Image (cartoon, rainbow, N blue to C red; front, side, top):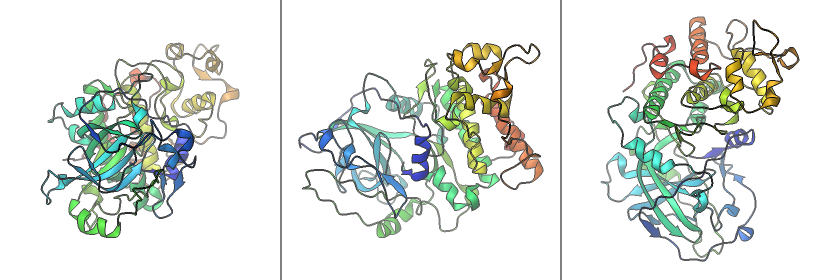
Amino acid sequence: MWRTKEQLGEEQLGRLPLRDLSSEASHSDSSSDSSPIPLEQAGPQREWESFRTGVIEEGSFRYHHGGLHPVYIGELYGGKYIVRRKLGYGNWSTVWLVEDLTQPADVGTRFRALKILKADAYTATDKCFEREILTYLREGDRSHPGYDSICHLVDDFELSGRNGTHVCLVFELMGECLSTFRLQFDDRQIPSDVMRKLTKQLVLALDYAHGKNVIHTDIHLYNIFVKFIDTSRIMPEYFDQNPAPFQNRDEQRYTPILSQPLRDHYYPLSKKFANYDFTLGDWGSAHWTNRRRGYIQPLLYRSPEVVINAPWGKPTDWWNLGAVLFVAQTNFQMFQHTRTRRGHVAEMYHFFGPFPVYFLAGGGSHRLLKIFDWEDSERPGMVKAQYRLRTARNCLLPDEWWPFPQEPVARAEFTAFIRLLMRIEPKRRPTADEILMAPWLHGVQIG
């Protein structure tokens, strides 16, 4: 929901922007009848960081015709959602803490997260289906064990403002993303019992989505959320410690305000991390399973089939999940040579072995094929010696090197689990049922 310096750095290393969305009108609100602001008059051309929160804030240049919608604390949206605070900003939207005036004051559903997309987020050039996919996922089988591990859409509507028409998505309130959640632990290494629980919940969430023919394609630390535990602390504590910032409603050019995240206010005073639940959110880059080609996924977590431009499907999410879990558990990025596809592929080979010939043939890069040795009939698909990473340590070999202290059995089970998810060939990656039977997840209870 919000962006930190770490996330901005990840994006600069190759995180894909959210795809465009397809329009589907519902009802609309008119929050402003001011004239559009031309892009060239929209203020400083830069983002900025809040020293108080460490959150990256949008520059005022993003508020222009086709861009973000200017929001003021206390405004009413959708006929029932009153804006209380700003929670954060993303590439295609701002997110706000809103109060649902139709709900009793003493219930947890009184507060929601309102995501207001850019006016030009819905175009016909590169369709994405966030609202449609979220609606479809919400209307599925609620008895599936993965249903509650998805950050579901609560409501949606459209509003008309000075910068255009904006799609608005309302979600259940979340505490924080996994990236900031890690800051509560030494060296950002999440305890194994918490890791195993969140892993099982994410596997079940993807199993549910895949059963509905939906592929997430964009799993990373900022799209995994910690569920809100204690909403009773919002009113007396959060609002007292986070007063509403001053906003000049007569200003000609909108001035972005500071985000005020909920990360210090969503859990009980006595933390029991094993009781936390996690959800998979931000389905803005999700695709139906009939989309089979094209670049997807954050670069650091990109699957082999995407890197070589081969067809991809549901198994691409399992590779993506494995790479993210490795970072969450170890605070160590597995891949260090992603600035070129040759380096990325060579590093995949270093960790996970040869690329089968048939698999490479399905890719679209003849230049990439040159790094493989086709003359070795016994081991085709080996990377040529001159392209191998001679000095790279294999972080998936516990006996050779390991970035955090754990018992040998736990290390072996975790590395075996990562290898299970991150097999080079998509067809050899496991099903959700096979993943859930892995020794590393034995005995994990949820719900």
